[in-house]
Length: 173
Image 1: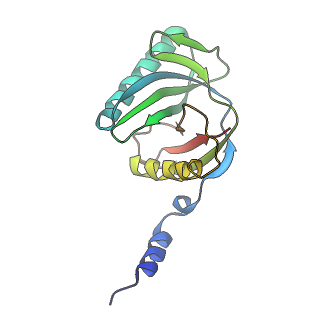
Image 2 (image 1 turned 120 degrees about the horizontal axis):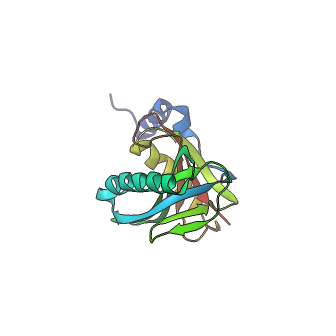
């Protein structure tokens, strides 16, 4: 017996966890500062770049006496088919002064304002699906995006662990 495609699609949606079915919603970006390092390259090398950036940020924070929170951040500036450009690091506990250290490290305040946002938990597949929900909202006609930022991903812990909760923000003007 063959089931019609429509029935299969409904069964597949029912099998998804409730969080996977929730659409992105309009919210606000947290009022926080981040210490980040610029990275760019091909998608195949992204994990290596991110690991190196986290280490560089931890070292820079220790040298400058900045207290990092446990929340890691990735600010996606450009997401091409083969390449990416991002800023990777940690949120800073408390207030900080914006600063640039060398060519790639900087402390900056997260953009303030509204954003399309969606929450998730899990690995890279869960992140990609959650990011897609936010990008779907950002790509609708009439939506005014913040220039230079595709999405902001904030992880409540180590993003390489499958149980790490995260939030994806898509800033709008």
